[in-house]
Image (cartoon, rainbow, N blue to C red; front, side):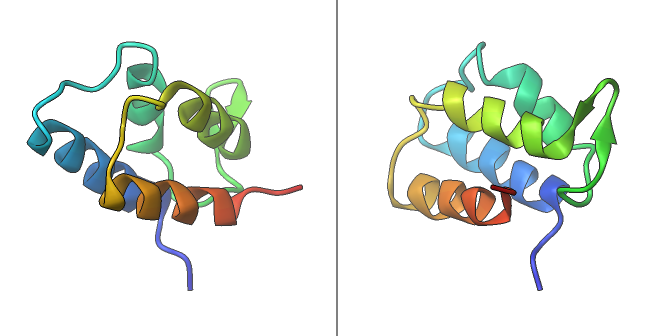
Length: 81
């Protein structure tokens, strides 16, 4: 069973801070949105969670490392194609 988006978002937020860099200002709005979402079928204001995840991934290129790769892969596995 997939974890809820807010759980993944919290882990990303905590890890990104631990690696010594602040969250990218480009990714921050999408990470903040992730923190309020449950499933990929939820809505955030006028966007659906699928779109929020895609925009987060597109703007999170400075989030790197083994844990970053694992968490981004977890998000990608939830996307609808």
